[in-house]
Amino acid sequence: MMKIKSINTSIFLNSIFFAFLLLLPLNIFSQKKEEKNPSLKSKNIVYVYGGWEGHKPAESVDMMVPKLRAEGANVKVFDTLSVYTDEKLMAETDLIIQIWTMGKLTEEQFKGLEKAVMNGTGFSGWHGGMGDAFRDNLRYQFMVGGQFVFHPGGNIDHSIKIIDKEDPITRGLNDFDLKKTEQYYMLIDPNIKVLAISVFDRDKYGKPGKKEDPIKGGTMPVVWKKYYGKGRIFHSSIGHHLTDFDVPEVLEMQMRGFRWASEGKYTEKESTITPAYKQ
Image 1 (cartoon, rainbow, N blue to C red):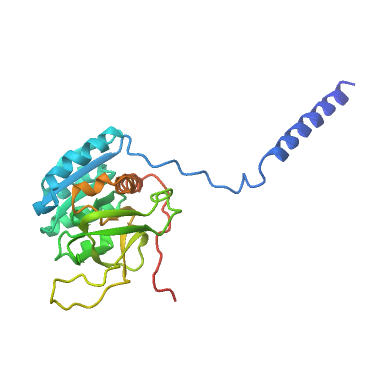
Image 2 (cartoon, rainbow, N blue to C red):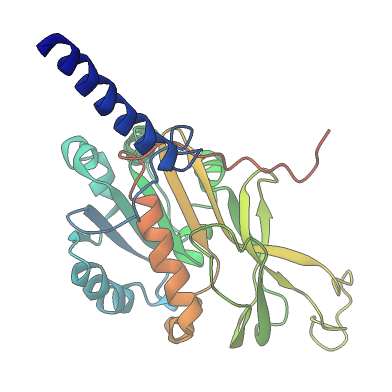
């Protein structure tokens, strides 16, 4: 009698278990665990500033570093490129933010920077502090994914169009306008994942009497992401004037880009190869 009772109890429990399984979503076992929202909390950040003073590198420290620390980041600030040769510090760093226009990297400095990024340290910045640095170093430009070449028209009003509204860096953001600031013309890697562009919509951009190739209707990548080794690269061409960050979308994109780039050592590598010229 006891044996029959035990069998019935087992059948009853199994029935409950299978009924519970039927209540679960059908695709629960096929879904990967969702990636947590990127965060700067407890991240080690190296902030490197200097170079041409027209982009206000020192002032950028006062603007940006408090925002990074407010999110819980451990930020170390340097006004020298020799920090890239500190192998121990580079290995412990989650994100390098560089605001250094033009200038030169020594071979040792570049090797230290490149090694850190290849091993998973993120690299990010904005405008000339990243995209117009070390003009004689082609491998640096290859790592960044683009390089400044010109700003037709000087300081002008222009619009920024979000072209990837699914990426977490730009999701929920609308197109926006910039006032009296530079519109970059870039040389870019045609395989980077472009998130935002600008359109050249004026009939003339050159100085009066100066003939240039017409560029009306042309588009140019402004914000992008990519990988270099294990390291995440995020670049925004916006920010010739620090007042550009008064536009909410500009600051939000930049902060999201920092968070994304800081996760290279902690999350799976995603696909950022989006060739412009497909076979």
